[in-house]
Length: 269
Image 1 (cartoon, helix red, strand yellow):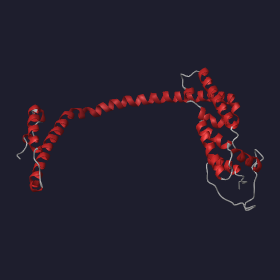
Image 2 (cartoon, helix red, strand yellow):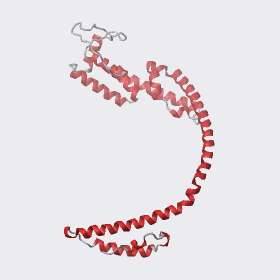
Image 3 (tube, rainbow, N blue to C red):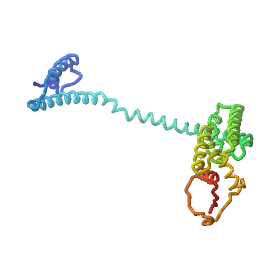
Image 4 (cartoon, rainbow, N blue to C red):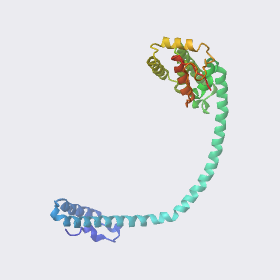
């Protein structure tokens, strides 16, 4: 096929193109290409037509890029000056912003100290759980400038009451895995997670031969009568073996609870 009309516009100013006329002509010419069914025998014609279309696209793209560059030239000339002015403003704005943020952060830190002081005064009902629970119960809204003393004190009291209620529920479960369950609660503040963990540990105890939670609790009472001091057995005594365990505190609590539940005595070396 002959060259497309648009190829004849190579190196012409795109601003002088008659786009309406070109669109109509190009649509007609491309339709002619679309009607051709190329075969293996006419592959040379296909390659030639592909070259023609590549050329047409290049003419259009080159004209577009040239016109864009010409349009942008005035802007690109003054862009550095515009940016310089913006940077001057931004540098001063940032300096002021840093001062404002420093003040706001100091105010929040002071308010958080007030919040923690009030929490510590009210969290006695949580016992040893008060300290580890604080980061989870803390609500960042309490230290916002818009939050008054009465509001954050109310929020703290509600949080403590809810936690205390959940802790009582956990202890009321009479689970031999109480310490692990309390740790799960500290991590998640979720009673659903606590219940799931209790089921998991109970199943593990059952698999070890303790078919009920009551038997697991009896094993704990028999093998570890002291609530504070773990019974210890020297390594290699009564069939004991020595091992190293690499675990987080949370994992170690679970291991200790399970060993107690199945009647394992242990010592820390």
